[in-house]
Amino acid sequence: MISASTVAEIVGGVLHNLSGEELTDGSLFFDSRAPRKNGIFLALKGERVDGHDFAPNAGGAFALLERNLDCPAIIVPDVMQAAAKWATFYRSTLNELTVIGITGSQGKTTTKDMIAHILKTSLSSRNRGTVAPIGSYNNDLGLPVTLTQCNESTGFCVAEMGARHLGDIYRLAQMARPSIGVVLKVGTAHLGEFGSREAIARAKSELVMGIQPGGVAILGTYDEFTPKMAESRSDLKVIRFGESGVEEIRATDVEMRSGFAHFELVTPHGREAVELGIAGAHHVANALAAAAVAFTLGLSDNEIATGLTTFKPESKWRMEMSEIAGVMIINDSYNANPESMAGALRTTALMAQERGGRSFAFLGTMHELGVQSDSLHREVGDFAAQLGIDYLVAIDEKRYLEGDHGDWLAAESRDSAKAFFSYVEPGDCVLFKASRAEGLELLASDFIEYLKSVESERGLA
Image (cartoon, rainbow, N blue to C red; front, side, top):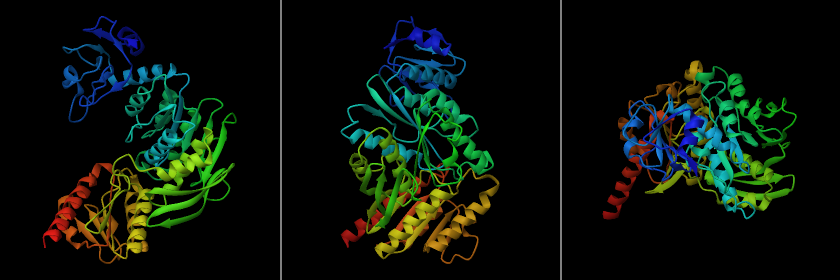
């Protein structure tokens, strides 16, 4: 336990309604609905709510505030900056902790969840605690919260690192001090902010620059930038993963069965069969990245393959699959960029073909693509046509429909898109996907309720 006076000294704050002798476990939290008994509440100001309004009843040991309130607190000029200072110090006290940093244009959260599952289930590592938050905690708020969930008994922390500007990932890496860094792929996500894939590559390479001396860089071979990212770090061991046949960790004999990838996992120690339990060929890359981390940590090929085969998605709205009234629903609505769109559409088309039904794609806007946004939306529409998607429902996004794509449909809003639910029949496969801000998970939920009502009506008939 740590005293309030120590925390105040580290963050440069002033004690308020505290003697300084009060104790905290050092963990940070910002949701007053899920308090940590001995934690520190972060009173964050958002667009719609101000955490200061909840601080007096937030629980925890005390709060970090920017103004005086009638509750135990440390007053600081900036809560976010104070959280970063505290997390940096807190991490420095955990000398036995292995931090695994993950970045890339897509797949970070799934890869993080895969790594955590393997570590938690394998005999050789499960006795060492693993921290990996459910969801996408990959920024200046999420990483401090993640790091301060660790303690002396934690062996591994699996942390995502995202970026909207150059320097973001390096700053996060300085806080987390990873000894293993994973770069999945450089794609087009956040192209609007960075302006080019070259700039995105520079941002992602900051994780490699931030790996602790003598650490390990795990690099994908799915683009022209990532494999070269450790060239200036001769002190690092480099492990490559991919499907081109030259990587230390690779997949061979990849087959898709009912939308799920089956493949042979090849490592320097041998090979094992893997059957993924998350739909989509694009998840082979994520599985290989997770396998490379586990291999680096000394797990056996059998432990790795078993962990990958038994993995099920934990974070919400990422290739979630369910079947209701004979209809297969793929809810991949958490986020979207052109690469992840292509993977989800490919899976949808394949599953519909195997089921003997039709393929539907309810698609919303892909954000943050900059000046290439128009062309990239058109390319996704063209790709869907090439795959033979039967019905694409473009929700307030007509750029998908530019071109001669047959029976495709436009909806002005999520509500108007519901009119097309009745087109779906048993045997069909239906995808929901858009960028986070579009909230397409709400439409997917409405569709599920619609199917349940259809199923109920059939039962009464």
